Length: 437
Image 1 (tube, rainbow, N blue to C red):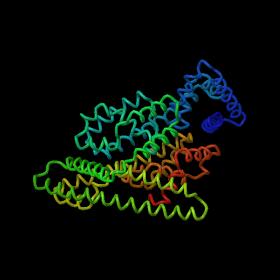
Image 2: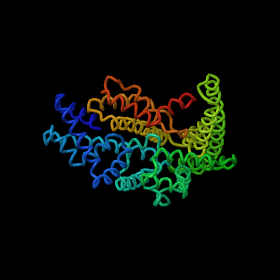
Image 3: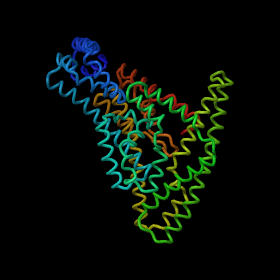
Image 4: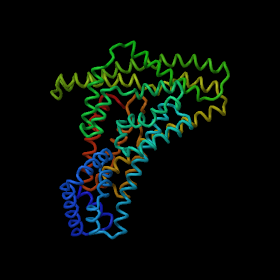
């Protein structure tokens, strides 16, 4: 930590090598002193644990609240420069949290088809809950790993009054209640008795063990969710006459069945393609049969989750969309298409902003570096999220690949590699290899 901080300070305020080296030594001594201070250690460890999910910048913001760290910086900086430096990291954290908040709300609006008043109420609940917990960071949203828990904690108490009956079906499918065993695991994470990675592995094992082998049960659940999404979508089309309503309802029934058929066919095709690819790896000695079975099992589990939860694209059924155009007036249809375009653009921008904020918070980018990274992110394609897999990891991966290494210092390049390992870039490469894109 002392190295990255001294380098960023030197670059921002033009310190010479002697001053930068002296600052590095002072910072290192201050960190060691903090570690040896038994009276402050427990509180500091708890603060660092909370900040850890926010990347390097969140940790640094927590450390900069310590007087000893500020004193070390004050040896080389003026009072104005020190305020500016601390403020720059606080501003980065605000950008990070803003990107995370926006991503959560865009995700919720998209998956629950929220009306404007519902979104505003949900956003107020999320803001109050997140401010109380203080743990909303871009990093935790990349794979949606903390998104579900935050929404559940913020909205669950008022979900019945906030959401319509059809939206509640979507809510319960996407955010099922935690059972006692799952809650125990999450409590251990909150208490620092288990890492998030360990918790994820434990929860995945529970999912595999509890997987429902009843195909009819899974199909019935997927059918109910798809129907609920279409019902919510139709309710937002405005006032329609009885003929138009009946026509849309009839077409919606067909859309549900077509959607389920497409899911089933796609699942079989994905498993076959992945198995063929991995068999070639087994025959080439690059993978064992045990690894093949483990990977295939993980893929089947992922697909089961997608089939249970991800039904967003049912509203994009071609016949359903054509019927909407037929039953709406020309003016109403133009407004409908504008809303669709706005939601699509908001979804893509939220993923790009989240990816850029994540890179910034991990690499402590200088202003000119951040502007360049944001410019690269603005040009990236955003894949569809309608198959149950988040789009942001792919945007983040592409952003990392396209960022010019000459733009980064050596420690930033190392940090970028570490971020990739932590956030599953190897998983992205494997998913793309088996046809995710």
